[in-house]
Image (cartoon, rainbow, N blue to C red):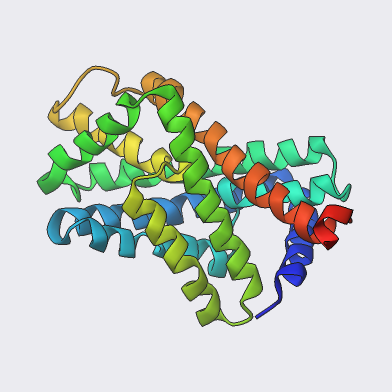
Length: 257
């Protein structure tokens, strides 16, 4: 594996390349990533219902494994582009452009999977669980959602960071497993995963009429996606990206002692 200071340079180089992607590729690769995470969410939901929370947590890392190995663009992982920004390799405009279009692609991919899964009847036997999960996500406090988003993407970006350091396919898959398993098991909030979980609950509610209240797309955007996204950016771009930039790239006397 690469040493941590070498990983930092790889992360910076990857950020530069991501900033230069054409918009169409950002959206299409973002759709792939959204679909990968959503499909992992489908399987993890069944794991939770039939084998318990630990089983679901152990299944969900398949999503990031597909993102890393198959090649796609995931908003939360791309928060590490803050390293390239801090070192002057990319500008703020190119960073925001990537984040916006990748986020849009993730949303399209995840919502499409949610719609297809619900329309296909895959969740018919566990509709109550799907709706209950979605309702819980839009019912938490705004500040609580931010903090859970911070904790989540701290772990997600650590997983991506570790995957950068692994030099084999098996190593990359193993590297992402434990941090992702931890965030799912602990109940932290991932914006892209929620792009699947909440719409799936909304669609199931439309079919079965299980719940009402804030379980609609307006409630999803305001009470979950917005605060969780803010938290994800803080956890990934600021804490992990900023912390490792200061440690391994920015030359500071305090870090040499």
